[in-house]
Amino acid sequence: MKAIVYKDYESGDIYFLKDLCNNLMRFQADRATIKPDVMASMNFENRLVPDFTGAERKYIAVAYDCEKPIGFAFAAVSKLKQEDISARPSWAQEISGLGFYPEDYDVPKTIGTYKLLFVDSKYRGCNIGGQHSNMIMKWLNGHEDIEDLWVFVANGNEVVGKFYEKYGFVHSHTVFKGFIEAYWQNAKRNKE
Ligand SMILES: CC(C)(COP(=O)(O)OP(=O)(O)OC[C@H]1O[C@@H](n2cnc3c(N)ncnc32)[C@H](O)[C@@H]1OP(=O)(O)O)[C@@H](O)C(=O)NCCC(=O)NCCS
Image (cartoon, rainbow, N blue to C red; front, side, top):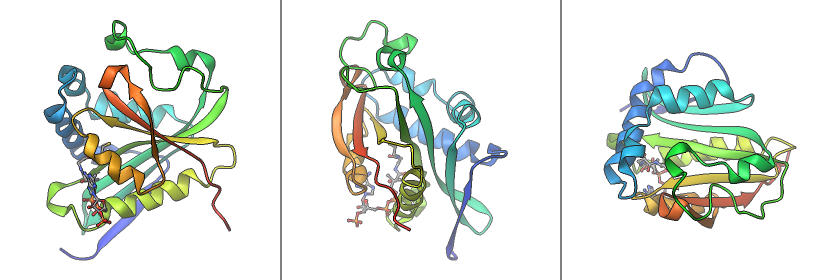
């Protein structure tokens, strides 16, 4: 393994991330105990592509070993409205409990979400996830209008919440009776 090189993208074709993204979706589906079928239905085409193309402001950090992408992280900015607070995906219609945001969350508000993070298993433990997270946090905190940052951890993978706590996130609430754990922090403006 040569030195790992990092690149970032805010637009363009992201097809080269298909395998890594699908590996992440499989990783989550294999561990999920609550609605694993919903996790298993997620893939590059229905998760990352629409999220990336649909967001006005988005950021992907990619780690390369030579020419080969071996890890990536994805974040985006969105404007939350009142209807987003009560919104539920079709598979969550019968599940009670809080959704993605607290019921009394003060909106409208611009938020940044750390959406996806994955490092190829052969490369874990070498601070590649840490480098990705530093890039993501710097980018998220570079937006003047972002008030809060969010990250959502899939059930079965709760241990990774400890990883996000290293980057300032604190547990906010349990989403859809344990399907996801939501972590939150106030945005901190980057100092010049
Ligand atoms: C989570 C993940 C991206 C971390 O990447 P990595 O390159 O192995 O992480 P790093 O080497 O930068 O680790 C940084 C620190 O976080 C800790 N850490 C890494 N993975 C962790 C995990 N899954 N849970 C808790 N802590 C973790 C490391 O012990 C290390 O701690 P230290 O700085 O005190 O030594 C990687 O394990 C992965 O891809 N996991 C599978 C997918 C996943 O869980 N993605 C997150 C979806 S929400």
